[in-house]
Image 1 (cartoon, helix red, strand yellow):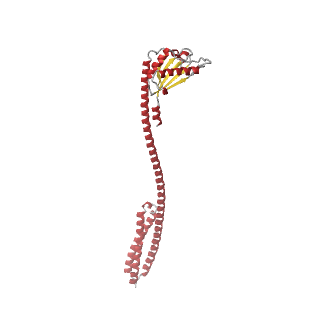
Image 2 (cartoon, rainbow, N blue to C red):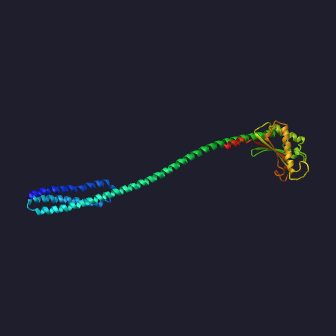
Image 3 (cartoon, rainbow, N blue to C red):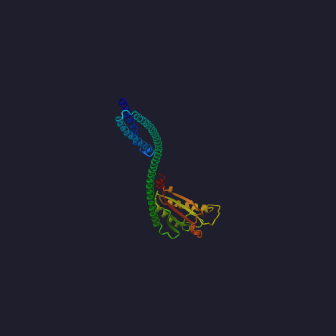
Amino acid sequence: MIKTYVKTIIPILIAILAVSCVPNRKFMEVSQKQEDCERENEQLRTQNEQLSTQVNEFDTKYNVSLRKIDALKSDTAVLGNSLRILRKQYDKINSLNDQLLSKTASLREGTEAEKQTLMAELETVRLALQEKEDALNELEVALNLKETELVEREEKLAELKAKINEKDSLMNALRNSVSDALLGFEGDGLSIEKRNGRVYVSMEAKLLFATGETAVDKKGQEVIIDLARALGNRDDLDIIVEGHTDSDEFQRSTYPRNNWDLSVLRATSVVNIMLNNSDMNPELLMAAGRSQYSPVDPTDKAKNRRIEIILSPKLDELLDIVSD
């Protein structure tokens, strides 16, 4: 009877021992997969170690029980008590196993939620970086365009400077040429100067006209003819002939009736002499009267009564460069 009972109980005990190892294996798997949760599972591992110790103690007790069974075949009360103890331990192990499974599920759910949150944050960062990259690309395109425009402007500026230098050299040569042509008249009410990129030939009225008259006298005609022939048939100049008077006002019933008439008519007389005694292009000349309103010396009326011939380089090429 006792042998039969022992044969029956031993497989049960072995099965219980086998089941008791399950939590340990699951725990080890959870421990390996959830290393980042080590601190949180520390208490559970401690409990599991206690259970393992209890199981080992149980094994010892079981071996002792076997020896007692061999020694005391008739003592069934000891086996019954041991069985009850084993059942209680088995129930405790099952309870701990359920706790481990529940904790593992919670950890997995928490990890998945954190993962989703992190993925959402990473996507937000990625979109922000993409937006920044697009903005940088647009800025790079704009900068390249500006750089191209800057290079073009620098090329235009260099071309413009070259043209200005060319015009300046032209005006220097023109001043020298005019000065040579009028060498005999300079200092006798005639002056030649280069100013603001232009050549100004200034002739006091006494060199050209009698008082209040608009017809150029003989000596004045010589000056004007020499100047016109020195200029020749040039298409690279704009020529303005300006008449100026002093501030003494007068009124007449015939022309010139006032300073405005006097300044305009004297300028026109000079233009006619230049055109009649040279091959100058009339399209390049302009006659203008400034009356008394552009004096060179408010204290010297003789200097203010004058004809100014302003020689300017044509700026069409410069304008073309600027407008491109």
